[in-house]
Amino acid sequence: MPDHPVNLIENEVLLRFWGVRGSIPTPGPETAHYGGNTSCIELRLGNEVLILDAGSGIRRLGLQLASDLMKQPLRTTLLISHTHWDHIQGLPFFRPAYDRASQIRILGAPGTRERLRTALVRQMDPIQFPVTLESLAGIRGIDEFAEPTITIGSFTVRTIELNHPGGCTGFRITAAGKSVAYLPDHESYRSAVHSLRTKVARVASAAEEELVQFLQGCEVLILDTQYDRIEYPSHIGWGHGCLDDSVALALRAQVEQLVLFHHDPNHDDTRIDAMVTEARRQVTEAGAILRVRAARELERLVPATRAKCLAA
Ligand SMILES: [Zn+2]
Ligand SMILES: [Zn+2]
Image 1 (tube, rainbow, N blue to C red):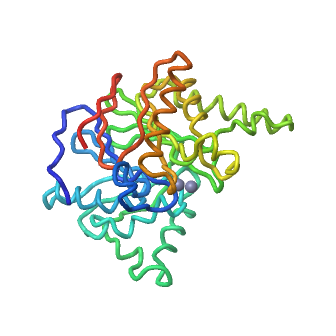
Image 2 (tube, rainbow, N blue to C red):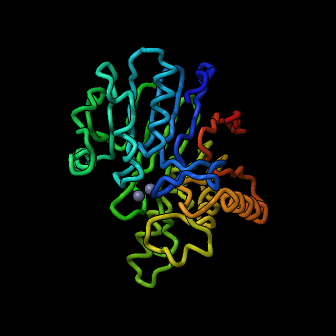
């Protein structure tokens, strides 16, 4: 059920996780702590709301927004990283989208408008779902970034292409002097960097350097960390991250806080706890300073130099 509206400190960004799981929702007692909904994150600054992805977590966000707004229409932009179903499957259940008074703009990466529209229409085709996309009267447009960096109200959003089959866009969102990077589905370039094919290795190295620069100095990095070092070798090429690579990337980019994200559907709460412990061990072993946590549904973060975690 919706809880009480968040007390917002003026000019402070608030981040809230509504879906943290990869691939498929995983409800059940063994995932109750971190949560079983697929990707959805809310960013707020004052009255402005920015939403990242529309996995199953967006359903509950919709109920919360309806409660917070107290019958005021919702104005928001929904950024879609890519159209794999775990990042769009919640949209048909996002209540404000059915409200004709809402003004919801959906944005994808440069050059993806038609692909995005097609995916959203198809998942609500009568063969798949009883209600069509046109019923979502609050959606006022499906568009793409006109440029790699755009401004949405008080938020500046930069994009970067990630390493993921079919493509995925990472976002770096800056507001009130703080930056949050969201890389929901990404496999490290590591194996390609070590390729014996010189051209492949060169391209991968350049992409890795570009990514490190893109992330440099972020307060919060939310990063695909689906596998540990035991699981990863049998999933190379699936487009998802390995714990060791996540820690290495966060250290190279000198981010303040690493948030493990896109939890594997087969990882229960105990397993995710163990991954956080291992990540922290690797940071200590490196003699570095980096805060590490795993994304947890309903948890709130205030991106800051010493990122604060509010009670869930
Ligand atoms: Zn995904
Ligand atoms: Zn994906």
